[in-house]
Image (cartoon, rainbow, N blue to C red; front, side, top):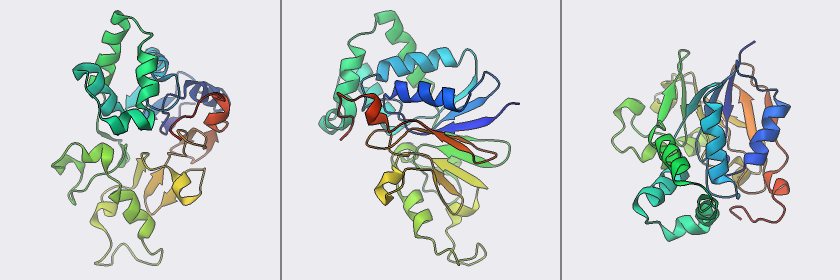
Length: 242
């Protein structure tokens, strides 16, 4: 039976992804939606991208762009970088990319260039890395960077009074456009959680894999989820983004 599975921010944690695939018994019948931030943190960023490129040959994969992916692509193509990026996982990515061939680099650049900013499925469910700000929806967004940098969508969802009805004039318009919205970007460890968090229609799947949390894969239709070991335990001699 095929499933629709969504995967949170991985940050170079290839070991965690492989562990998750075993736990969730992922097969070639499953559709896999990745929410971005494939790189920056643990030591296997380039190796993880190679794994995903191969995975697309056997699975229906949807790869969404994260802010760290865009930062990495800028470094790869322009040989410039933001010093803050280096401190927040970029150095591990740079080290990882020193090991790959020029031919492999070409396939990686194509991978980054083909990332999409958001995806809407046939059940009016939105998938994107961070958020959007336009009240009419992501198709009317003015600034592309919002899709992978925004935190206001998640902050708004968390701040909603559970007793506020959707018909209330004060109910945020962004949260009425889609039946469900799946995001990463802001680790739920910031609110002392390590499992997917649902606030209004928003599901946050970033369970802090770059820091002290696990990597998560969630069945979109049943809401069953699986988690790796805390990713830092799989890379005991590394610091991740800490």
